[in-house]
Image 1 (cartoon, helix red, strand yellow):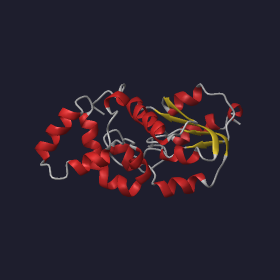
Image 2 (image 1 turned 90 degrees about the horizontal axis):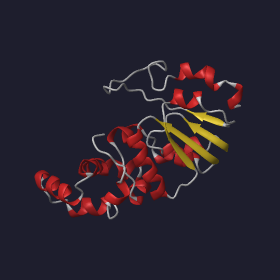
Image 3 (image 1 turned 60 degrees about the vertical axis):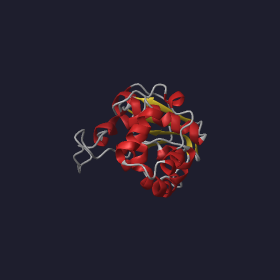
Image 4 (image 1 turned 120 degrees about the vertical axis):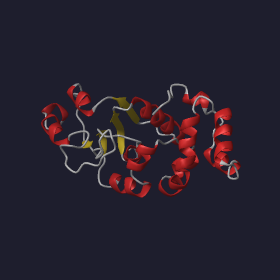
Length: 201
């Protein structure tokens, strides 16, 4: 992502994607870019991304869209739909779930309804800034988002937990699709010895 979102809340204190899309429906591409740059100068690329994802988000994450949540193209394409996330959450429950492939956090929000605490781990610090912003918009308070690679997080984590969840990224940094667990990120097979450690049970 090409921008720094450290002050995202200040930059978007009046942002409403539904209103923006409605207001700019008749704009040409050039006029739209000019308007967004002038209105949201520090995060205009992010806003353009929201506009490009708007129609898909209405179908896949409608309540998130209405709440004012933000997406990146990659995280949106890889996230679960709301019904799928709810189904996953219906299968487990407990005190602590650790998600080692947290991404946009759709699954974590669903898990947060059936677990006391959630820890979501993702190495993309800029995405994590948007995710924390989204959790505030959604009113979810029992998810901790950690900026780390799964391997590094596990090496320094020694709390008992109930569930480890991994939905590994099956695309390379160049967006090429991979087909094996070993080539996915994180490498699930490499994590198994650490996951079986007694300190996590």
